[in-house]
Length: 297
Ligand SMILES: Cc1ncc(COP(=O)(O)O)c(C=O)c1O
Image 1 (cartoon, rainbow, N blue to C red):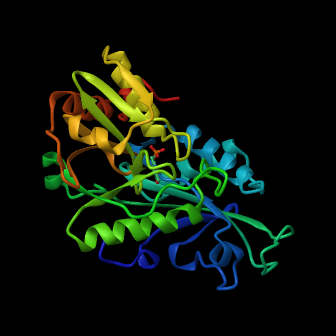
Image 2: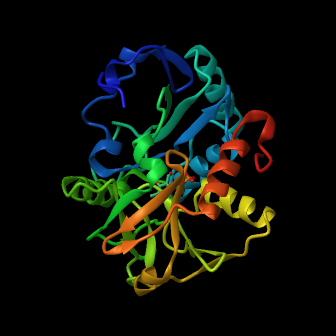
């Protein structure tokens, strides 16, 4: 992670239809998105000069905005083009891409029906989400205290800024105890996901992953399910109870930032970095390369 603060990196940011200097991409302190979390965003990665599953991410950005009750004033194609152009302007081939849309400053109150919808894209270099050495050995997860909310109490399927409040709290608590991340249960007490990535388990040659009924059905999750099935592995999407953790042999996380990251430990339970996990790590690394993107759009 860069030691330079993010507002002091260099290059350009695409903001409301224009490329502006990185330092000039500012918003006012009285911005609805900041006070009331009326913001949705994406996290994408470029590999070898191409953004993996770009259109799928941009469509999810639009869908997240729709769930939060607003419409982004740029089409999917316009945002896709802006992402591609910005990647070139930043002179990067392997990079992290962060589009965001938010309600502006026109109204400051719970209701902000007439606020302007803003949209920006930033791209920067971001090699590995977890420490690369630790990643190969498997990362250690704490059990989070917060649970993924009931879809009746929060818009659980939007990639909305507000939903990350409990993720940051949970990740901070885990890091304070020396863990890399935390595994969250859902509102019913079933296994859900990590704070920024989906979770998978392996037992007796079969892959198990929770039904994404109250959290993001990650683009990486769907890609890895396809890759696993293409290899002939059985993938079971189902409710997973925390007491089942004891019987699982392997565990890994999937996410745009995390890619496929083996897990060695969750609370008192231990997992090996086994062959199925390694195979899917390699298959995912191959799939994201522009000329091998078998599961790409
Ligand atoms: C909470 C959460 N779950 C899951 C994911 C994985 O989603 P994706 O694979 O689309 O990046 C992410 C990352 O965006 C996330 O933040």
